[in-house]
Image (cartoon, rainbow, N blue to C red; front, side, top):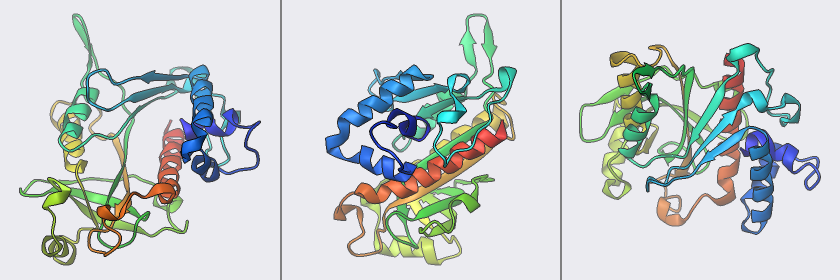
Amino acid sequence: MNSLFAKAALAETISDENLEDIAEILSRDENAYLREIVENFATDHGMERIDDIAGTNIPVQIFDLSKLNANILPAELSWKKGKGDEIPVLIVMDYAFGEQAYETMDELLKPFDKKASKIPINIQSINIMGKAGILIGHKGDIMIPTAHVFEGSTDNYPLDNKIDMSSLENKGLMVTKGPMISVLGTSLQNRTILKYFMESSWGMVGLEMEGAHYQKAIQVASKIRHSIDENVTLRYAYYASDNPLETGSTLASGSLGLDGVKPTYLITTSMLNSIFAQQ
């Protein structure tokens, strides 16, 4: 919502600022009224919000890009509207927690059941951004997974990650690429186990709690049920909320705060530009 609409919505309030600066301003507690302005503007320009009424704590936003004026986009985004029925719709789900990720993704990718017929959803890409513990790097750095390995089992999910690396590199943050481990819980981790995953042939770059669950649901839908394209485009990227091996950078040391703004919007604009280029 902020990436698409904040620049235009706040044009009379905030001028000559890039998207990252605007995002930092919107992140401050005292600027709730600015966030309301952006949401009202977005609602008037093709965004629909689906509030959580089932206790999942996962709100959803749907963006009808046929109603989006490309001229109002910030300089960081580049898009030329397609023609006819080829204009994409964006479905944005808030991040799930643990195995909840499988359930939400599994439901999303099922065909739409309309009485006597089932209508497959023409999903062109699935883009997942999360925050994770980094093993080689610092808070705010970026991890690009090449596989998700589920802790405590032999389950592993290699993936062809189509994230645009060039849009993330040389932006002042370290970008690491490699396998990531999906852990059962942060409280179960210890230095010995983490150093083993990092230094052994596993070569893990980070740990998180949802990747294997998301990828399991995607593979079921694309490779077994065939309810979506077998070669659906996948983009994954994580930013580091902590480094559990570094004193003073663990989860106990506090939240990212404004340090999380830069990687969040780097990844978001990268994914959006790739989606726009794909249509």
